[in-house]
Length: 274
Image: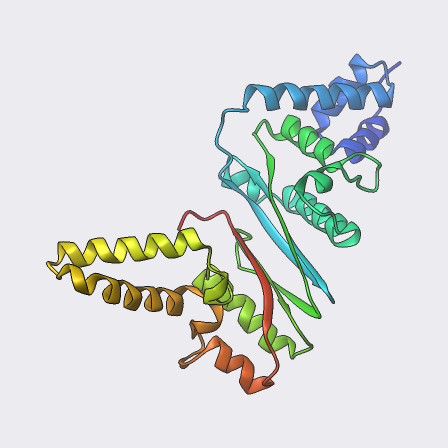
């Protein structure tokens, strides 16, 4: 049976594969669409196995918010050329839509969820590998919950943030905080939430620097505590200088809106090395 352009177009819509890949798969499967899909999928699996040791450092990071829930999804690939492809970005958007709808608890649950065609996100990634010939992986899935949430995608789709708050607030203010997280990369909201191993490391580094500068041993603890407070000011969200007005902290900016307003959670995902 001859393969028609209508058949090729139908399979291309189903799989997202190129015209020639669809034509070859249909010919091999004798126009059986299910078998043709399996051929395309196996090609993706073969390419994935072959390129498993490659570095997938490029990709697309997208985020969204809807009331009390916000999420980030990042699909990684090998080259910026693929990352900027409209079909690739649209696929990440479909993954994000599923995450916003189903609210999976972790990345593994998200990978198992189906898109509208019934195939799982994991299968869609495998199929896309066969189409592009590049290694791909779902690199990140993060979410926050709160009374209200906000998302921010930095131009270029390499960096995104999501933030949750304890009460309603103007979108402009919420977005300012999401942009603060993007720009200043805090490690936590408050000093109390900084992991102890990070605190211990900062203290030890400060002491070593003081010793190398010739400071007496009996002054090292005080010097280290001063350095730790400086670290908290630079690296914890509410103590950071507000990027739009460095005369106030982020906490002061929030309290200018409402004394009870506070950030309760944030996530930041970036594919940039810096």
